[in-house]
Length: 229
Image (tube, rainbow, N blue to C red; front, side, top):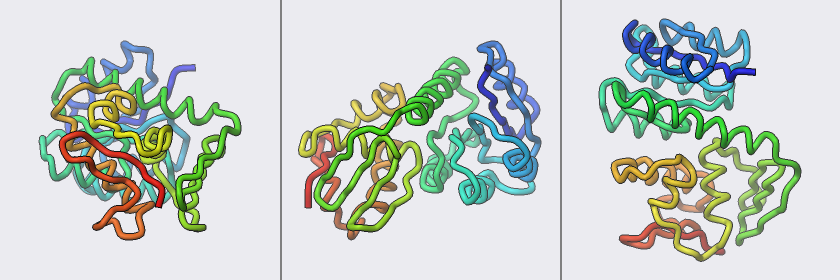
């Protein structure tokens, strides 16, 4: 069965170009004209992924993302048609799994869609897996459950994947490039700020004081490591 994608673009040209590229790769695409249509479609029928232009009219893309995350954990790729780094960072903080500048390489965009869907399929199909304990962080890989200091914590798909990667070898430095490659199939140095935003979002979920992180430690000039506290 072809993966179903809900595509919300601010212009007909954007919707048509992205939809054509996806359909050529055997994706099923449903287009939405505005934010209200996105929310209605998300409630009406499940989709495998949402592509959401942040420049939507009527209801802004960021407002749609905020409302969508209140009712669904569906994977979301934000489309940054205004090339605004601030908007992209806000989208990631609100729960988008990736943010892509458009117009851009449609081939790269399709690759990011495939990478995100692969990640989600792996997580859905995983049977009950091992449990990792790193200090006060309890990570159940099979159930996708995280408990921090005896408090259940909700993580987005990207945040969970990042925590899994960091917890593979606690104390080992994971470079930004390795995080980008393993989590987003990207080797673009320009995406390093996206990596930093995801780390910051994860810190807000698992640190006692996100402004003074103790669990996810920055190693200047190299990357990050997860330590037991």
